Image 1 (tube, rainbow, N blue to C red):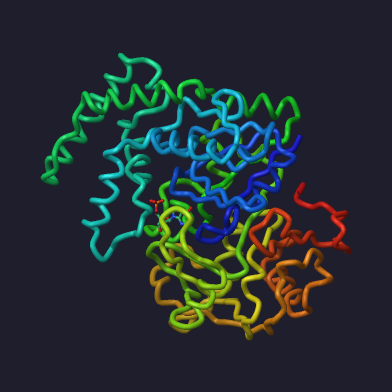
Image 2 (cartoon, rainbow, N blue to C red):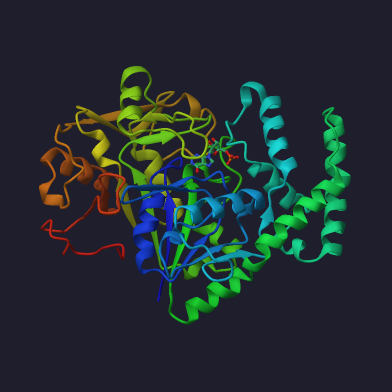
Length: 439
Ligand code: IMP
């Protein structure tokens, strides 16, 4: 058996959906372990493009069991919509057969979405630029012990008790903001209705994953967002509200130390949506060029992504804290035609140079990146399938990152399609490439 965690190691949107989709071909179980429908995992299969927000990316593989773990916050109405949408595209989703939802998963309720938006407005210039999906307030209620869990939907009496406990506090909060209180009966009615649809997926996900591990099944843990958005390890407070890295797997009821390999996913440059520090951000023409070439618009909110050069300092830090064993580099094709390419190798400020990411160091925002320049290439990479066929400058770029990060990059992605992948060591284009990362 193998248990692998795939984790983004920048600020999200690294292309994890595609990597997980490739790897899920050989997985028995795919487990989402953190975040919620703030994620947007795009997978292109043939001419169809699927954007998954909550459903694990293994849903596109017949025979794979897809689990949503206890650390995920679930908007039940959005989950139903997503299931219906994906079924319309011809994908089989059968609750309790290929889709399971942890009884312990916390629910995102309509007032969480409202609270998210109101808090953003109140933050003014300090706003985070959240996705507005209620993620932060749902995690906040989990920690405050007034959250509702999926299991609460299974028993009307329990549900009523939990709703009353939550509303006694929530309605006071809303009153303070001059907002109308939540209508208890409507909320209960809506929850019971959505519960009837989703309850067949209810599962003790932790037990299911641990049993699968004992049975030597292939388990893939699907990370959402990226390490630099981790609530503890990222660019706080401009972060999401969950543990993005392998540590978050614990909340799914599986011991993180049993995870055998951690596969990091990084883009060949950097993007970020929302507010917060982004040392290598590019403005004006070059930023616009990368955004246009990379179609860099958010899969969840459609917001234009901020774009910049690859940041070795931040990625090296993320590789270290996530315990990444190997890396998948995506969107290499997007850099064609841009020369020179720059890579941040250190940050500088106040007479100091930081080769190590200065996590939590006061004044981080004022540091400036120190770049090395590398030659670019003009060739279109989208149909290249082996490392040797890449232009020398593209190979040198990958090797530069590999050396700077101290971790191998065995897989490169050169387009959104399932087949637009280069497995390092592959000598030919005949599909008989050496398989690494289990793909
Ligand atoms: P929240 O997760 O909606 O609270 O948003 C907090 C921050 O994380 C914002 O800057 C979001 O843009 C960012 N974020 C959340 N999910 C993703 C994602 O899947 N990709 C990229 N950024 C994300």
